[in-house]
Length: 455
Image (tube, rainbow, N blue to C red; front, top):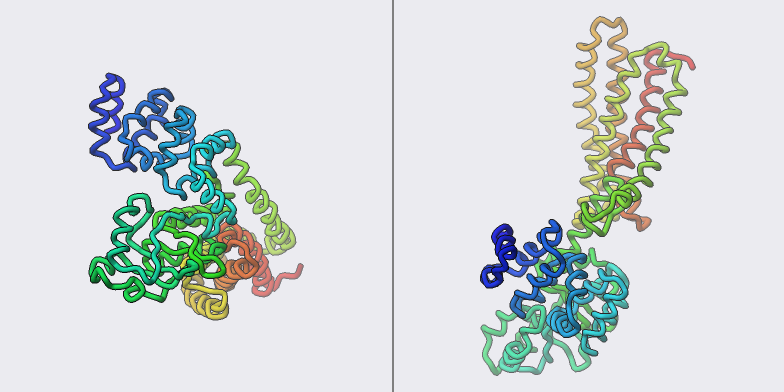
């Protein structure tokens, strides 16, 4: 499709472009225009022209799917009237997202293009803390009083539904806008016209408060399979709703951030290719420096046990096996624990339960790995007169390394959570560094005992 539209643009066959756009979904249209922008196959004026070929009822929705660079380019090409038409057709939460992405001069134009009521709602949302439920909510929803009839409610949906973000869930409030119930569009369609909303509503409403963390909001969508979730203030008055699409954006953002932390990288708000080389290096260098300097602990330990090397040189060859096995075991455990905490399967109150479970797992894994390694060394170094001592030493060290690494892998993420640090920071690189030093220290102490070496 991209090639067809590109050829049509080159031929200035805009009628064909409009016909193609009329058969496409708004998200696909946004991707297509984004392709012209990213591949630099069209000038700014041609990209603006492509956007102007969209029908008015499609333009705003396609605009919402575009990335910030393309949005800024289009806004700079819009007249004040065109910008006002786009802002009028955008949902409030999309307008807030747009404002947060744009430079100050563009924000001034956006706010100037918005009507006074929209500006009031935008400013209200912008006042909430970043990453809170209030910051990702929209104020465009349907709410009714409990003494309203089904017929009146359906009439309101017919007249206002097209400007609301969702009409599938209707919220019921008291006279002072306290949230007292919820019902679905199905409840309305299957009820008599003269029935009162208060009689058919569900009074047990799941809500989030304006200052609750957005990750809690995303978890509630995952747990309850909601289409929308009401946001209330500290007096239980409904002030907005979070819709499913925004919750999924939050989930994607949180997962991306966790992946970055687990790889010892500072998260970036931009995509991989839009982040500069310098920014990538800056995001990575701090943790790399920390990990490199912390690894000197292992070097100091190895240097302290030079006498053991001199007596049994083969001990050196076993260090990579030990540290690698310990690091892998610690990474496995930390990944499982971090995932469990992210999904709400593991809570801080489960600390001792998790430790005990991982301890039992580590014993099974350690015995198997130790036994296999014992056999490997006996076969590999069968000509060495002290092969049994070497095999015993390394296998005991592996057992100790596995048990330690698995306990460290479950304790550190939960400890981080307890002190309000992202548990993902205690993932593979950080745990591997700690495990390497611990394993090396244990290994050489076992070697001193098995080979009866005096320092």
